[in-house]
Length: 280
Image (tube, rainbow, N blue to C red; front, side, top):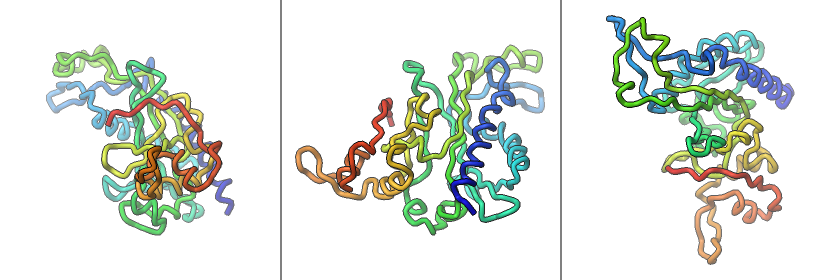
């Protein structure tokens, strides 16, 4: 089995799938989901809360994912527990040793700088990432996957007032209800190619993404010049290796520039990109 060939075939199919997704979930580039309905046929607007939007988006596209998997000869296995990696495991029907990890990620454009998005996490760099045979918080050991991918959705948030969010609608109002999100971009990429060298969320051990939309769509992350091997080694040692700062004091490794210097590797391996500073 040629690992790189199988990865390339799967990524090509996933990218083509991503390009078609908007036709299934949007009309005039506005989300077709408007709210949720009760048994009295009252319709309530969905909250603009990103966690709620993300979960409903995932539910909306999952049936389409099933069709994609079947068309390409795969079974989909969902993560056993909510906090396990990945969201979806694709297993070849012909050869179960061919497995791919796919995480669904959603994020919104920055309103002040629309060329940037808010970013997203790309999985943990904790135990299962360091010990590639570990089964802790992961569906299968990390090394059992031939590739690790992200299927992402970038959107703009709708201009909805608080009074509109709290209003109750009926079926006759459905088409005129305000849209929560719009202007979608769908993409698929290997996660290491869109990774930054910074953590993704607060104090948790998550890998952060780059945030410039153009770079995300091109797979132009911090590690693309160095390769996946150095992405793996950097994140396995992030916050662990002790390096010297500019004053000569020791600190925990926190940038790819520091890593390259520590390993004695050329600075040219660092793909220095413009990345909006996160506000965690």
